[in-house]
Length: 203
Image (cartoon, rainbow, N blue to C red; front, side, top):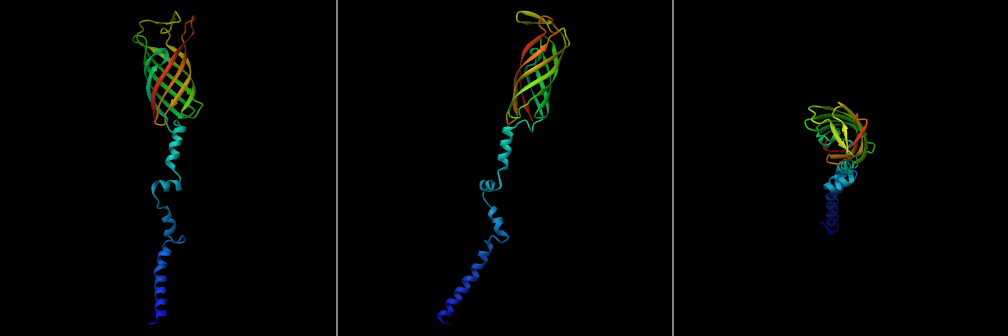
C-alpha cells in the first residue's frame, strides 16, 4: 500500500467514527432537545419557570385565598367575655364567626357575627355585624362604664357592630384587633364600646 493510499484510508476511518458522535449531539436528533433539559435543579427551574416560587409569592400576597376555616381564642369578646370561636370564610371578602365565652360571674355568652374584609392582602380592615345571647347565672346585672352602672345582663340578646383590622400570615396564623359597639338596652348608655381581640389559626 502506498503512502497516499494509507492517508486516504486513515481519513476515511476518522470520518466514519466521527459521524455517530455528531449525530447524537445534533439538535435534529431525538436525544438532542431532551439532553438540553437534563440540567441541574436550579437551572432547570430557571428554564421551565419556578412554579413553587410563584405559589409561595401568591400565599404571601393573598394568604386568605386558600384558607376557608379557622379556630381560635377570643381574649376580648362581647361584653368583655373570654372564650373560643370558629370561623368560616367562603371566600376572601367575607367570613362568619361564632363563639362562646364566660363573662361576669357564671354568665355565659354565645355570639355570631358576619364580617366584611375588603382588602385581599395579609392585612385588611373589617366591618362586622352580629348579636350575642347572654345566659346562665347573673350575680350582678350591671356593668360600670364611665362612672355609671349600666343595666346589661338583664337583657338576653345584644346586637353589636364592630370595626377593626385583621391580619393573616402565609403560614395561617392570624388575629384581629377592633372595637365593638354593643347595644345594652339601658336608656342612660344605650351603646357600650368594648375592645375586641382574637387570635386563631386558619387552614
